[in-house]
Image (tube, rainbow, N blue to C red; front, side, top):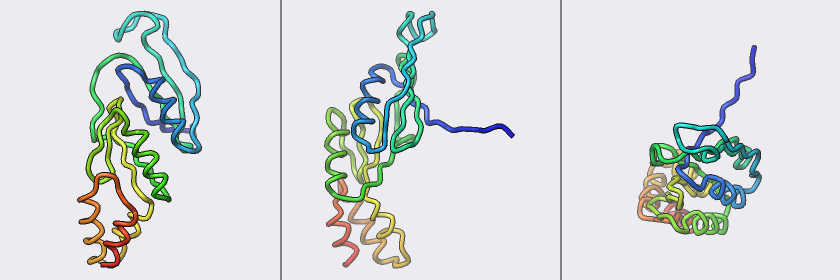
Length: 159
């Protein structure tokens, strides 16, 4: 049986390498890999205008393609980062949101248009447990937040 692999593939209109350098610098366990520039004519532009970049985020493989505008990123695809501490949330929220747009419930769009969810790992435990009243309080609190605050979630959980 052949080995099958799955890689997330992100199409950037421009600045793919810059984006990948930012992402891999912010997420522990990440690295930028091979960059391939295509020197032949392509439907997306002149020779040298199309490139792919292999990279990993926290060990998960991705490939970026820079090939001119086709479709903008949208919320149908996002990268969720589960953080242990408020400091991690704050750092990623600030760095990835710089030049982009902060949104409700821990979502943001970076300056390249890619959607991210910056959430505490604790959220699933507090909102997904068997106590339905606690889950509702935590979810209601989260829905009022932009950047998710762990202390606010814990307070909501206690009632």
